[in-house]
Image (cartoon, rainbow, N blue to C red; front, side, top):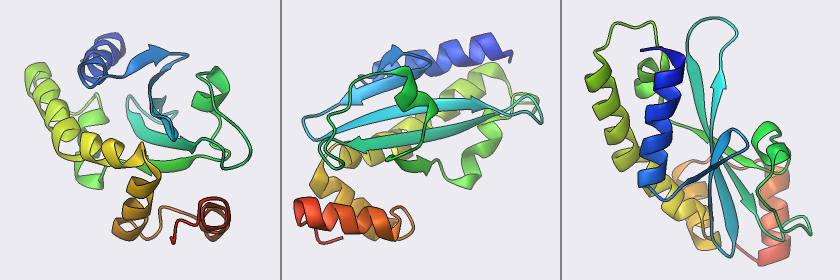
Length: 153
């Protein structure tokens, strides 16, 4: 699968899950958070790293708007990536049939990405995610969430 086709298919899957493309990422927003899907091209091969960034509105006295800087920077973001067992799907030189790769990426969205995002769009969900993924939040980020929102993370 070539890069252009891969990004097109990924974008279509993201749109099916209510993400809007902008600035090289795919955005979804709630009143509490903004979530960005981001593919970073590797410098060491024909592969991508798939990240999900979450910004909490008001956490650092900011209300985030869709922008290129949110896609590029990780400052003030909660960063999560799909589990290691799915990384091969983003290695485009791996010999996987295009249809099979597409179907498996859809499955990753359904089983991993969408459940994560549904939680990441709310403060309560972030609290739950911090219990499921103990290393998701740095101690400084935890402290800020607790001070600002009394979240108990």
